Length: 208
Image (cartoon, rainbow, N blue to C red):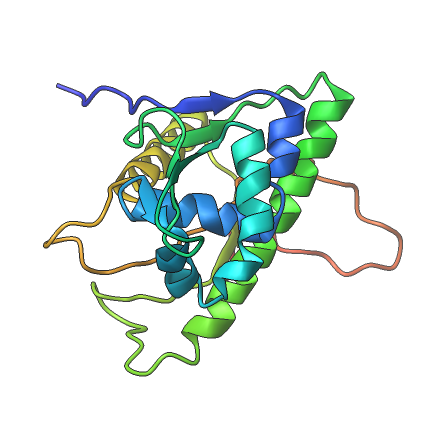
């Protein structure tokens, strides 16, 4: 029997998507989720390698957008924050491509997301003991472009859904490897060859 689909909290408002377009605010939300849904400003600063003072502005915006809730605490650094709603319910953006505002917000979000991914990858390459091969591989950047059948596209989406589910669990004694994962799946329209351009093999491109 197939496992039921994971229950996500949809972010439908373009204004909220724009709030999440900031790379640092994406990192704050992701880190809160990875820490089980709530953390102090000091904990967040430690995990992100930043000063707590530099997080308060972004935390206030996230609280104003009702994406994060302030819980209070002794002193600013110990002030606690948690994700709004059920921390076990990951956030997912709604895609309304018939709305210009929505499309503009999604573009901003993707830009910020790729900035975070570039930063994560660059920092990973400087990590001592980085594993780059085998089943315990920790670092991987790849781009593939290929023709898929309808069945293969469905399988690819199932695999991505499973990956999202795996990356949505909080830390436990067994889950002791903190990693980030970013992906973009996008359709391409085959363009006619321009005069003078060399032929391009239509087989899958794999740049690892």
